[in-house]
Amino acid sequence: MRTPKFWMLSFMLLALLFSCKKDTDDNGINDNNNQPEEKYKPWTQNEIDLIMSGEAHEPMRILLVDDLEDSLFLRTPTIDIKPDATDPVLRRLAERMLVTMNESGGVGIAGPQVGIGRSVFWFKRFDLPEKPFQFIIDPNIVFASERQIKFPWDGCLSMPGYGGSSTRHSSIFVEYYILEGGKEKNIFEGYSSTNFTSVCFQHEYDHLQGILFTDRVDE
Image 1 (cartoon, rainbow, N blue to C red):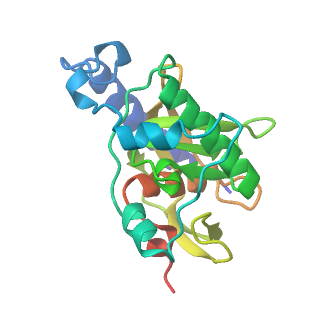
Image 2 (cartoon, rainbow, N blue to C red):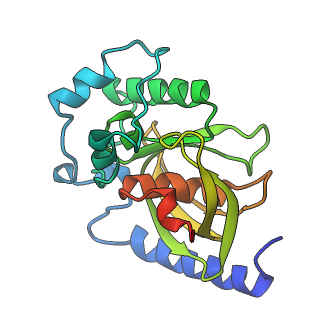
Image 3 (tube, helix red, strand yellow):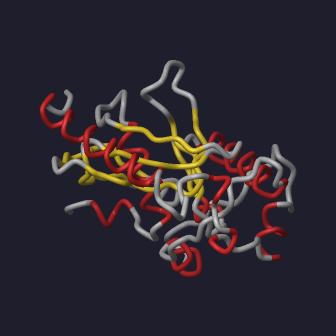
């Protein structure tokens, strides 16, 4: 099922108008080459120690909500990190998060779930051939459809064994950076059992705001 054509046309038009406005902004905040350096805070020593404590092939510990300290950290909003392919710490984090997610059987994982309070996550692109995973940096949901759906298969690596039916937007227009430093803009849809790209993105994006999927479950 897809959003009606008239809604998608309006949705895409608004997205295009917003994109044009933002791209011509005097501050250039959507151009990675013009990103103000003060926007970003450097890695803390604790973050560096945690990320570099293992090799690229070694998974990280997943924080769990039934641990008080872990739960408090998962409820803390993240801060941005500069997208820089030459940053060995960021690249190691991406590599280890991917291993952690794959070994846990997940379709997404966010920085806070491995103890790193930065705006990064992996999620599965069910909308693309071969369904690859993509590493997202400093994402922003620019527009979300008014139409909301109930997604009955939501779950979380930080809550093993628990699932529920969450309320999500059927479509979203998003902006984000990739590890190589480029910026991408996309409209994500999908909330079926075989393609829930939009839901997966929203779930991981919520983690960056300190929101858990249980906050979106009615019961």
